Image (cartoon, rainbow, N blue to C red; front, side):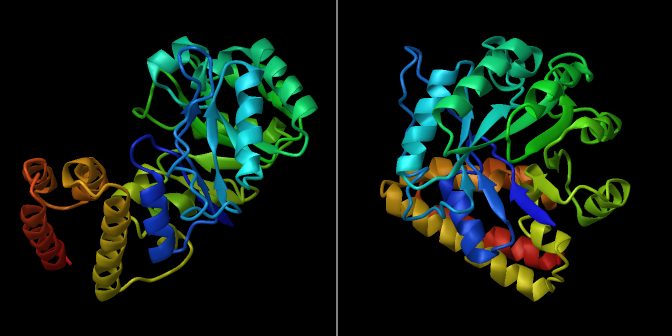
Length: 316
C-alpha cells in the first residue's frame, strides 16, 4: 500500500512537505501544487524554493502542471528533468471555475480531443519523462469521465489519480465511490483513490470495498491531522508521541520558512496557512485562528503558540 500527499495550493508547499517528511516520513510520494503558464503563454513558474533540490527529494516529488496545450507541458517536463525530476503530473482535477473555464484542470475532462492532442504530442517529444494524471469525474456530470478514460488508456501513464467528484461540486457533497468503482473496472492504468480520506476508519472501509486499489492519496485529512498517514500505515501514536512530534513538525516548518523569508511579515503568511487546518480539529480552534491573524509581531506569535500547545495537550 502506497500513500501520497495531495497537492493543495498555498498549503502543501515545499515548506510543509519538507517539515512533514523530516518529522514523520510516512508518505511514499508528494505532489506540488500546480504550475501554470503566464498570461502570454510563457513558462514562468517560480521554481525556487518550490522545486529546490536541496530541500526536495526528486525521487518522491512529482511536479504538477495545469495546461490546455502540449507545448507548456513539454517545456515544463524538460525543465523539471534538468533539475532531476523523472515524472510530472497533469492536473485534470482542479475545480476552480476560472481554471475550468480555460479548459484546464477539471475542464480537460470535458475535452477528450484536446486531451488526446496533449498526450500524443507529449509522449512523442518527451519519451524519457514519465506522466501521471489527476482527474475529476467530470465538470457537471459524474459520467463525463467515460469520454476520457479510453484516451488515457492509449498512453503509457504511470497512474490515474481519481477524485470522485465533479468540478461543480468542488469539495462539497458526497464522494461518488460508485463511479470510482466503474472507473477502476475499465482503466488500464494503476488507479489511486483520492477524496475525503480523513480517517483510518474511512481508509479501511474503502480498502475493504476496493481490495485491488493499492495507492491512496490524502490531502485535507492530513492537513487537519498530520498523523493520519502514519495511522493509516498502522502506527499507534501515544499522546506524548503526538505532542513531541507536532512540536518538531511546527518547529521544522517555522525554521525553514524563516530561512527563506527572514522578514517576519513575509514569513507570517506561510505560518498562518500552516495553522488553518490543524485548528479546525480542536475546541475553539476558529477563535484561536482569528487571534493568530493579529500576531504580526514574532514575540507575540511565540506566546500564541505556547497557548495553543497547552490547549491541545489539555484536550489529550
